[in-house]
Length: 159
Image (cartoon, rainbow, N blue to C red; front, side, top):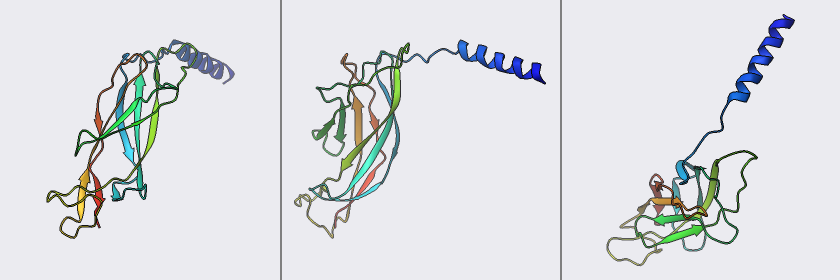
């Protein structure tokens, strides 16, 4: 039994030492993970929110910056409305070639947009619900842009 345990431990150590760190492309890659809520009440003053979580990999590990914004969130209803966030400077593990992890951003509610031209953020009995999808991408310090991911539809309650 003693020899079996020694051989087992030696085998685990040998296999562990042979594992290679994953290699990622130098462009960041992001994947949608989840939302804390798929329903929000419309509002203009941060009255409701959801947290969007996505995972990332970056092969050269140059993600994050203390001076620049690098997460971009676009309201797909009006692609000219983009909110930006900042990823702080991230460090790599010693000897690692890349970096990976998850990012969670808190997104506050927005206004319902009405097809009849009604003023946004006003209650509507004719259009009680609006739907919103966010497109998200990130940019690393080398100006490599990630793929774009999309949230599932978020229901905005317009009453």
